[in-house]
Amino acid sequence: MIFEGKSILITGGTGSLGKALTQHIFEKHSDVRRIIIFSRDEQKQFQMAQEYPQEKYPQIRFFIGDVRDKDRLIRAFKGVDYVIHAAAMKHVHLAEYNPEECIKTNIGGAQNVVDACFETNVQRVVALSTDKACAPINLYGATKLTSDKLFIAANNIKGHNPIKFSVVRYGNVMGSNGSVIPFFIKKRDLEGALPITDPEMTRFNISLRGGVEMVMHALEHAWGGELFVPKIPSYRIMDVAEAIGPDCEKPIVGIRPGEKVHEEMITPSDSFYTYDLGKYYAILPSTPSWPMDDFIESFNAKKVPKGFSYNSGNNEVWESVETLRELIKNHVDPTFSV
Image (cartoon, rainbow, N blue to C red; front, side):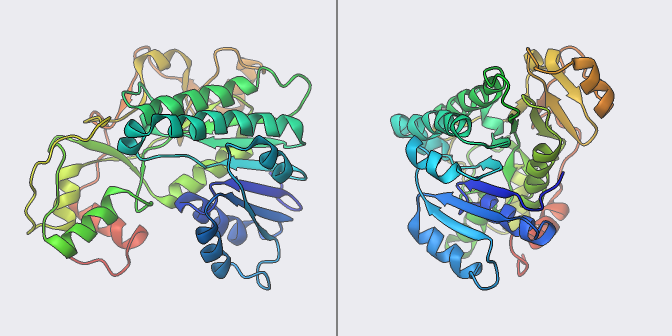
């Protein structure tokens, strides 16, 4: 895929993944015409602008706006070739107590992005999802599932427009804002205790680099309508606690509102449309706008068994205490020690 001369816009671009995407694009595709960071937090934009001064990064632009405002999105999308939609309200327990706000951003914002793309000349869109959108039990997951459906369905109403919409779904991003590892490190250093919601809890684990690679894969290879799922390890919350604070107390505090003990990324019901692409799984649309046989041949795609599921509790690949410590050093805090 040619990025030379292309304009890329990232909604929620000042977040953990948005910043990692920006760094990756400048390192690997420095011939882009423009990178636009679209977000509503002026302070984060100000801070990010210090990291990317105009003299050294002349292609970067900062655009204050909210995905709830369709007119602002339309203005921002003019001249843009590729959109990466990363803006979202993502904290599960906060969404439970502020449902209307979460719906406005995660569902209304998604529809606004779709509409703004149709109003302009955007060629490709990749929307970020979450494992919590799979068989959701919390409001955040329900809004992200709805968002996924909006982006996938957009491929059915594009007419002769060549635009392609796809979705990437993954688990907890190691070291991202609000994630458990930096939370535990801070708790260890300040209080000497690590609160455990449920000792049986497991989660999928992906690094920021892995998340970036997945977004770029979808941007380059999606035919339109796919929901990509990475093959990634799981971790046990007790192993994370042991890796960070082996001598800390670990009180059981109970599951927070909307939490699951194990997360899912593919349910047995999804198995009818799920294909193994090698590095990733892809849940294909029930009504694709392209010949299924051509897709299978192009990607050497193999149908998963009927009833297949992908759950953080029954994963075949697990992080250990030792591998978690190494990952924390490599991806979260190079000065980390026990």
